[in-house]
Image (cartoon, rainbow, N blue to C red):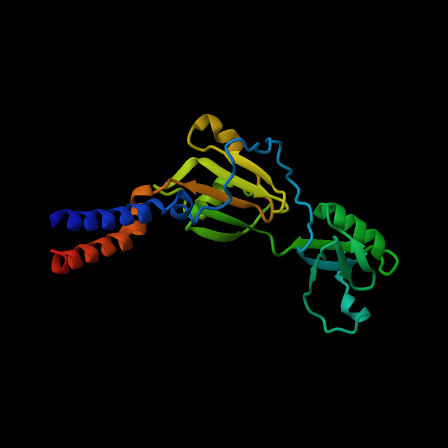
Length: 252
């Protein structure tokens, strides 16, 4: 009579093993981001462009001054709007709509190139126009410890480096991998992906990389398999404990 009871216990244990085996690596690493295949070819390093190029969806502060900057021209007089500071959005196709001159192509130009271009266009309306442009929404996104620690950091200047961004985001934690730092740049449907290693001093030259607006930095975290497995199988352990308790009460 004991054999059937032992078979019942074996069935319970077998069911538990099946449940545990169903906990796949994908479940354990469900918060992983920006995963690449082992054969993935990362983008090659090239000298960083020191001058920022205006991109679609940038927000521009555009000031128009006359007489080579001698006095401020109230461009709102041509639009009937009150004098104030305006932010102009670069549209999806790279055009920006400005007072008096309407829509002009501005995406892909450096700040200097855009200022020179607008000065030529405003010569039709103002004496010796002097243009000042600044991009007001430049920022980067930094995940310094895998997907669990993310920050959006404004780009205060055009010489902001990868190391500065990681430092401002809180550095690299004990569970992060300093030799696996990904940088995604451009359209996320087909971005450039760079891989950095800041573990060794010999690799720091490439890590002194100038960032651009909308860059995404992702520091991969070290897998915590033990703690994740325990948290995943905890419900099954509770189920086994309950099953064994019931078995002890009713099946003996």
